[in-house]
Length: 250
Ligand code: NAD
Image (tube, rainbow, N blue to C red; front, side, top):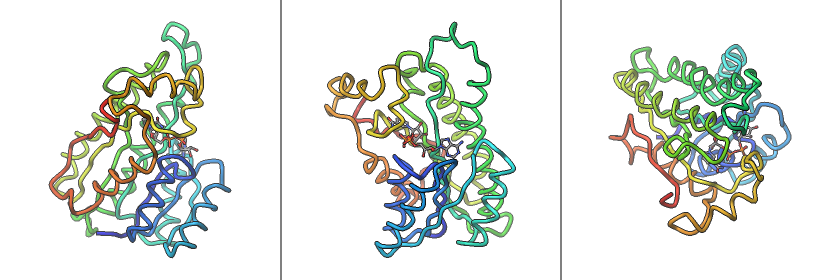
């Protein structure tokens, strides 16, 4: 079942890997980006050169009106979205809770990591729902193992936003099951992307943590993408309201 796949925050990292693999598996891919247009356009060109179909669409997913406008633009360029990967995310403020003096930083964190999932899911469901005449579809929410273990030092806020996503996956799946829409989550463990620059200590944290991971290394974006494409496929047709770890056993 391929169709139009929207991947949010797909200009780099895990989202780019999902977009790339999705296009290779026959999806027409909507590559969402918020600020950096060039990497998104480069990915679209790379997909086209490999024989796939993709286009780049700007929207800050935390901005409800911008998300509505983006979906309308995708309708025109690629056709209505038939599956969605809610991938875009930020680490947000890294600090102990008693040092979180800037409430706006928390609002910004939740605007992207949680409200963005609501905004994009809303628009996707309106197009995918069989009760509304749509084809059904799949929504994947990218969570984190931080939702389970509380995050690295100073990442309580980030971890809590991912915990909210896990709850949303369960509830939304039940709400839209009769619409022919499956909702599933993925919890990556530490994965080699630039988001890890945001940790306390930057990317050096990866080398410290790698030996503590049962498989002995951090993950690659392509390994998260393989799991996502499985969940999008009919091979996962009986999976909904669940979130699976892709974490090397961490
Ligand atoms: P990344 O920083 O490389 O990519 C995130 C992308 O999201 C970026 O392109 C960024 O511009 C985009 N983005 C951020 N805010 C946005 C917004 N408001 N609107 C639209 N796009 C926005 O990081 P990544 O590692 O590829 O992260 C992808 C997802 O995986 C995130 O949800 C992250 O929390 C999750 N995750 C990552 C790891 C890891 O170790 N890399 C582990 C667990 C979970």
